[in-house]
Image 1 (cartoon, rainbow, N blue to C red):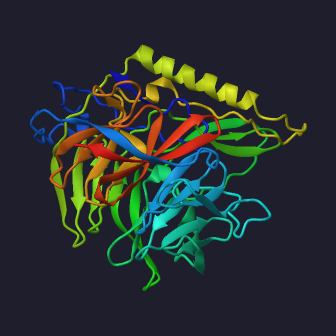
Image 2: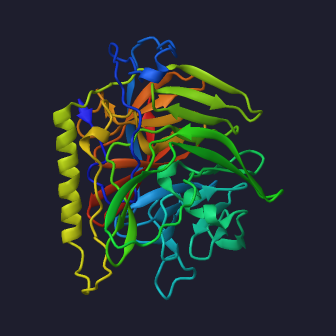
Image 3: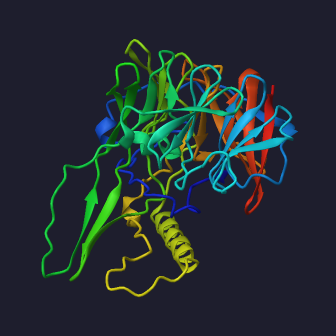
Length: 432
């Protein structure tokens, strides 16, 4: 049995706190129900054999250009645009994936500047074969045409939301058939003013436990909320000393949240993290639910929780130890983030990893579970769900690969990090 978590990345942003702890677990494939949801008894999808498919790699890109691929945009002629967040560059590959052309990076000779702040979800398919690239520095969208060239600049309706639009952990932002941009935002607690006092203090603040899916209409220049997701609220620690005050996010290694994606017909597909079932919000506003899906529920014991927290603390300490020393200052903040208590972890591994739900061009939903009994040889296994909310197959990726995009006709794009700072783009197909 393969258990996969994000313990090796404690320092990538502020992780969210899981608020729902499961207390009851049924037989294999049954979801644990929280006490407040014990009356919501949905049937479980029948336990029919689910085939596990393998991926056949068809083309492999050059091995000298990329460091780490976060997103791929497949173009009509078979070429692809690649967002390399680690190297902060945009690369266009021809249909063979052998010939690369850099269209934006941070060098002085680049025809276009990539920007100083990289985001994993910056490539968004737009009208026709065009693509939007988020430039956080200029607070704008850069429009890339079907040939992989920058064509123009487009202003967002709400510039402050660009961070959420480009956040890969919040789900892939996408346009519906009417040209409206769907993305997940965030709610905040009401602002509270704090005054410095003579005594030192420390307090923990929890953000709201729900987040809206927003819809940005460029024609009407408006933004409205469409549906809310249940999320693990972020925990922040606010510290006051004798001469300064600061707020810092707390690391939570196992956040349990709803995840979402947008289907090609404009339907919002929501994976409910509480019991692993699908909700579907159609373009006309009708919300429907599918039965619970089978999942390899794995309990987390008290000993497991303590071991997980200890592992995260060691990883955070190692990260800080590798940072360059800072000049002495009486106002310097601590460089290490705090970690939540073991009691804050859920009683079961959450069903879905944050930001790991995608829709392919055929309207199927690809879900990366946090645990899977079908995982073998170190490869990730995705649950592929049809429009009826049934897992029709499971697809195993080759070892050390991650899914970064789709093409038509069952094409899948993979990121293969062969060594630190050396990545390869692969095009593959599901062996059916």
